[in-house]
Image (cartoon, rainbow, N blue to C red; front, side, top):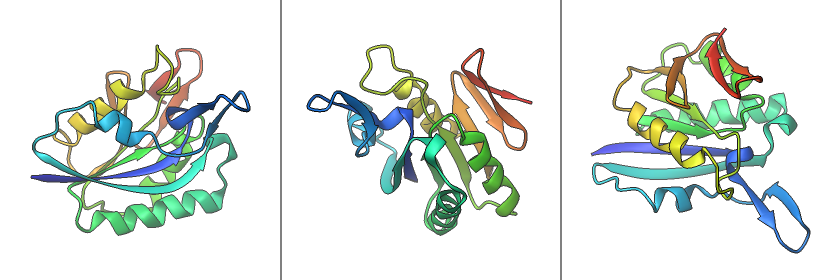
Length: 167
């Protein structure tokens, strides 16, 4: 059985709508709601909720926290999936690529262009693709999104096509 550690940082994928205030914010993780819809008989999952922020609000200190938690999670994990906002995902991914010399397992970033709660969200698709990707790649730092699996370095968000590319 493969053990997957999810690290959640917020981002669009985890934004929820508050009916009382009319706001769309990072308040809590929605990962368990996505995972509850999937059949994962050969995986055990653990979840580390680290930060609940839009990635535009993430600081260098926040990225260092993600780096530290990722390093800790490598021991005892067959793979790590990081839910992250897409606007600065490339910065955090590049930091992990530069700071983790030899990853012990695949570290796969994913996120969404639209929140999970939206009818036309890409959130579930991207989480599924990240889960599938852990079976395909050797240890390294990647992003899985929109039917692509890209290895760092030089992963960039294409703001016109609203996806990630090698750049």
